[in-house]
Image 1: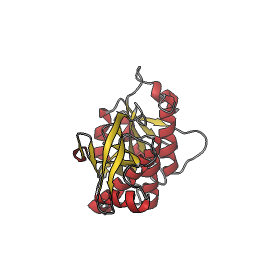
Image 2: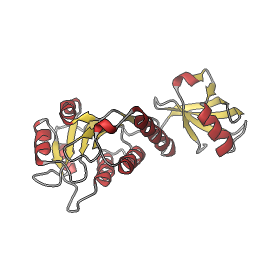
Image 3: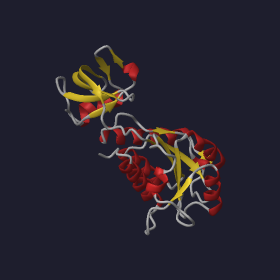
Amino acid sequence: MSSNRFFVSESDIEDQDVRFTREQAHQLCHVLRLKPGDAVVVLDNTGAEYDVTLTAATGKEATGRITAKRLANGEPKTQITVFQSLLARDKFEWVLQKATEVGVARIIPVQTQRSIARAKQIDAKKLTRWRRILTEAAEQSHRGRIPEIQEPLAWDKTLSQLNDFDRALIAATSGKTHSLKEALRTGGHPPSSIALLIGPEGGFTPDEVHQARDHGAAPVGLGPRILRTETAAIVTTALILSATGDME
């Protein structure tokens, strides 16, 4: 199987033919130096993947022919939505990339009291950049779907969404907390959807943790060492997916 993977729109797959974007055509021809007859893997962002043999590859246009179709095996059963407090650009983009590699389903930026970045600074251009980072990370890590990214939410809007999940967890560095294992066992059945709230540098305020608890989120600790916020997002996601069997 080719290691070169490309997400395309469902509309760019017709019968057994695939049409690549102009940007992808440039990458295929000028960066990867591929030519007609070479094989790549195409994904349609629905969980399916296709073996494709290139039929044309120029700097402006590329097409291919599907030779096989199957389910992508890079998607976890447990759907984790990370509500990540807004961070400085480089840190937030690192979270986007690594969380995709680990296996999150969705990432929602959140405006919290201690957020350094502000929601009003997030424009359409930045969202487009974030989606490109997610797409590239999903291709590299053999995901079958690109994690969703949404516009930043205010804290009260975040709290109002927590009831939509089987389990809601908030990473807390002080006060009474549960272990991840304890929190995941609560409820009597394995969760299929999890909301994970990760704070900014300095963590959530006590008021925010209290409010999240009132909306059903379980405060969880990550052991005796304090993790940086960008590390906490990745470590917690990996631990959850390990506990649910999605890393096997």
